[in-house]
Length: 416
Image (tube, rainbow, N blue to C red):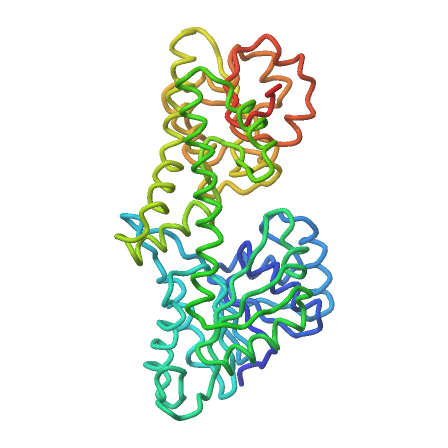
């Protein structure tokens, strides 16, 4: 007989595992499900495979209390949460295959009265596709959108996360949630679940609106970052200090220009706008252009760093940071990593990398000839410096160590 749980979390990654642990802390029995046996075994031992503030202690506690277990197989549950990756495929097209595979995985054990909630950031219409998969595999159940006027046997909804890496545990509880249902009753059922552990407001709407809200949030941020990045290119072309321009422009009471950088990274902002573009390619012109501006910024930085190295043939360069944002160990879609890989591939042992959040060089850098070193060693050996990530560890380091270096600072970390 299949065990029954209050909640089944499908996917134990950067969002799934913290969410599962928080739900377990709220007093619900949770079964985490993942295709990775290594992850399942780690969780069952009360350990974690990702770095996130306070997550290790939380998982240890809820596993020890018996409220969180993990398996490669889904159980019968009252609530099924799907938090699996939705990457980009070729041509910047969204790949929702893992979401639909998750729906197929839970279909055989989905009970009457069960509730399926998609949390993965997804193109508009993905929740409807989950309904179609479940309707095909479970003709014995009345599925929303596939049962005519008959009351559905299960509830289907969409509720994306709104969290910042490094603050996931805090923000999963404190932030408002948008809960979109395939029917109003689906939304209310999902809302009632989230109020068990979320202190922020849980606002109901339709599934399509909720899907677009998530994409809108990240596209808005991407467009604003693109303005800052393009402004940095214009200022650089004119020989003007962009950091001073932004600092003074932001003294206007209705202006708030963001800070430019080497590009845009992470699993959300660098990906999600393409979901909107793919759905309305003729209409999403500004969103597309912003993505193209941000996607092109790393190559511009590579060009500048290469020019520095070509201008000093015997010099070594210290590249500071590989993560996609400061003070985390997450390298997903990181422009800093992309830049470092390209520079290391060309200049090999002339490249010193400083990244306090890793013990080894990731990706193609591992065999490039570049070396992972401490900050002080890099400053002692290098003649050139490329600031790619403004980790606090770099900001707090003595400035005199880099005072005599030729610096290209993509983050304005040392801007006066």
